[in-house]
Length: 116
Image (cartoon, rainbow, N blue to C red; front, side, top):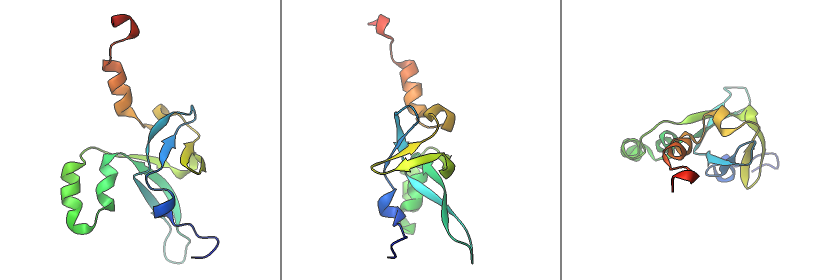
């Protein structure tokens, strides 16, 4: 591997996503690459959510993965990434990016502090 190359599969996949408020709001489940013949390949977006996982499976297991990991995925433009190390830090809130919707749904169902 060259000095200026990055092994994306090992470096980014499964890292936690952290929004601009410091809140963990998902994981990097897959990456969307762009580029083409004669053009450099680059990361266009992060895909987060259970619907992104089956694409990482070997082809014979993808259909099974699609049945197990139901649900959609959220596309987060790489332009919203401000830094990555042990986490991927984003420049927007989870709500702005459409991330952690399940957490917000559960929070609405949970009893408030005064309901105990």
